[in-house]
Amino acid sequence: MLHRLHKALQSSQPLSVPSPTLLPSSPSRLHPPPPTSSPSLPILNLQCRLSRRQLTLCSSSCLLLLLGAHGLPLPPSLRAQESDQTAENPPVYANGCTERKPTKTVFFDISIDGEPAGRITMGLYGDDVPTGVDRFSKIVSGAAGISYRRKEFIKIMPNYVQHGGLRSYGVDAELANRSGTNFGRETLVEEWERAYEGCPGTKNLAGSVGIIVRDPSKPPPKLKLVAKKGKLEIDQEEVGVEPNGTEFVIATKDSPELDASALVIGRVVEGMEVVKRIAQVKTVQENAGSPYFRVAKLIGDKRAVVAERGFNRPYLKVVVTDCGVLE
Image (cartoon, rainbow, N blue to C red; front, side, top):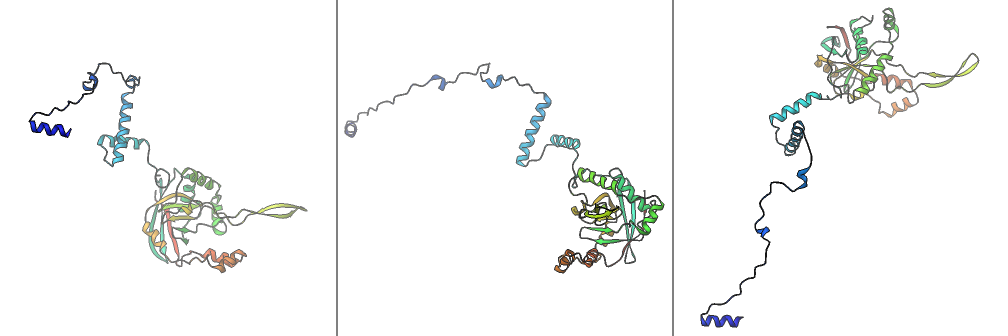
């Protein structure tokens, strides 16, 4: 090959280069056929009928997914559609229930260490918990023959303040009996059970007002043998005293620990600053972690029981000087 090239250059004759061989190609690849009027793809022949409403919903849902994935704002038409769907399905609030409206308003005038501290105004949920509201409002107004007037707050906890309520014996019980008021709490517990099951989540939220209707820490009744008419019979001895539904609590913060004992009957509408002033009163420090206290309680020493009752009690007297129904 090199020899021929050398001779061609010397003779000035053109070099003959073999022409390339072209492979045969299909004319259909070089010139595709024009589209026909009848498509041959089977997917286009499916019998699928969608209404205009279904197409609109499908396209809107796909667009919402695409916009949400890219973090883009919704167009005004889709925002209006989303608000319509929200109106059909009302939102669920923090306590797991729809918002409740007060039907009755009551008040407490409070004094701390003999000095007026202000007024607490509360709205009560008469439509949702009628039994609890009826019990509470009758005591506030004095219609039950007894009242919260001149009664003290007995505990100030980190999340709530607790009023001592009324006694099921002594002067309070005599006054209640004269007016036909019953300290029974059976219906209150039933109402609490309905609210507890139908309203999941924390119910004693900040600013809520509840009445104590049960004691979740109460031990079961003890069984003992007693002699009756010359025969030994098994009897049950109740341990502790059940709450009578007159003690009330006002939550300063969300208090899920109260849900097992308190029935929420309302909320503070004015005077939350007075509740916070009560919460700032110094109290007897809890000493349940002391080994001496634990041993004393374990062996049933009554001094431990008395000491436990004094935990979280305020050093200053916090009293309801006046109370009543506003509307």
